[in-house]
Length: 106
Image 1 (tube, one colour):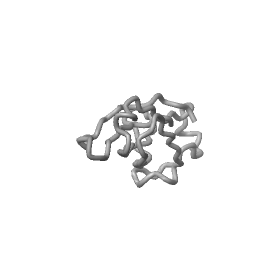
Image 2 (cartoon, rainbow, N blue to C red):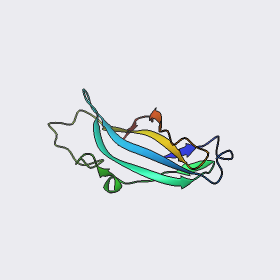
Image 3 (cartoon, one colour):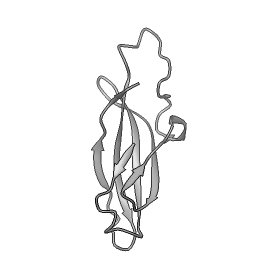
């Protein structure tokens, strides 16, 4: 996941905490696989790489895990619910919810 920061120069010297919540799209209620917060120095782009094993407890499901033929109705789709907080003297520390990424099929 790449996150662009249009205001990075204005917040030079501060840090950004980006929180991601990996979700599995389901018919009635989406399932949380796990969450993780990444902290970066202010920059134009933040590259966020993570594996299912790195996610903090939020679910027990493994992304891409084999499922029995009885409960598979097509390809599984996943997305990330995310937001950020700026950390530093200039910032208020308020969490900004950026919503959901596009869904991808695995």
